[in-house]
Length: 331
Image 1 (cartoon, rainbow, N blue to C red):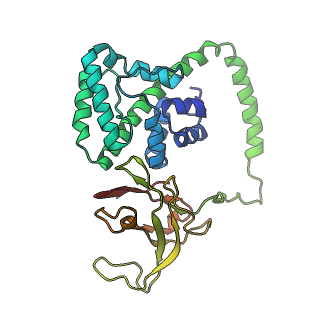
Image 2: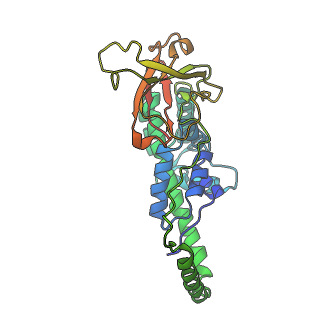
Image 3: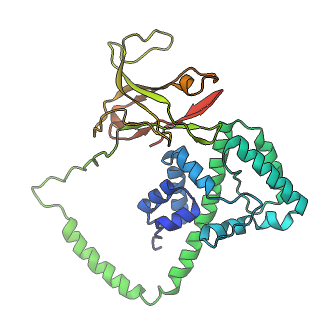
C-alpha cells in the first residue's frame, strides 16, 4: 500500500495544536492510518506541552453551538455534534449553554468531549459529572477526549485520501513499477559499502535549546503562570544521589535560575550542550511568592538522567493550582 502524506494544514484540522501539526508533518508519510494514530498519540501525550493542549481545546466550538466557518475542522465539528443538535430541545440547549459557561469559568477552557453519536442529554450529564473534578484531573480527561477526536478525524482524512489516490492510480502502476525497479538497481550501487572504508557513525543532531526546560501552567485559571522564580540544580556530592529522609546540605549545585515569562516558560536554566551530564537534578519553583494564599511555599521536583539519555531533551512542566500540583516528563 502506498504511504499517505499528511501536511501541517491537514494535521491542524485533526488537532488544533500547532505543535502537534508540525510534529505530524515531520513524521509523515505513514504506511497506514493505525500507524499514523500511534504516532499521533506519542506526539500528543509525550511531545506537546500543556500550552499546546490548551491551544487545541480553544480550536473547538462550544458543545451545542454549530460552527459558522467553512474550514475542514469546523465542518468536522458540525458533523460530530449533529446527533446532539438533532436531539436537543430549546430548553436543553439553553441548559447546555449555561453549564458550558460555568465549566469555562472554573477550568479556563471549553468543555471537551468526543461528541460523535452522543445525544444532548448524554453530553449534559457528562458535563455535570466532570464539573466536580479538580482542575488537574479535568485537564487530563480533556486531553484524552481530544485524542479521541483526533483519531476520529485522522480516520476520516485517510479514508478521503485513499479514495482520491485510487482514482488515478491504475494507469500509472505499470510505469511506476518499472521506474521503481530501475531506481532500486541504482540505489544498490549508491548504498553499497566500499571495501576498506568503515561505515559512517550516526551523527547526533546539535541542540538548539538547553537540554532541560520547563514551563508552569496555572490550571485554576487555565492560563500560563508568569513571574514564577525557577532554579535548576544538580546533585554533586560524595554520595551518588540524595537520600530520602536525610538533610541534603551542600550536595546541590546551582546550574541556573530564571523567571517564567507571560507564556509560563522559564528562560535558559543551563548551557546548550549536546551531551547532558548524567546525574540527579532538582528543579524548584517559588510558588509561595506567586500565590501567597496557596498551600505550597515552594515546589521541588527531583529526577535522574541516565547515561543512555544524555542526548535526549527533558521538559519538566509544573501544573499548579492553589492546593495541588502535578508534573510529567515531556520532550
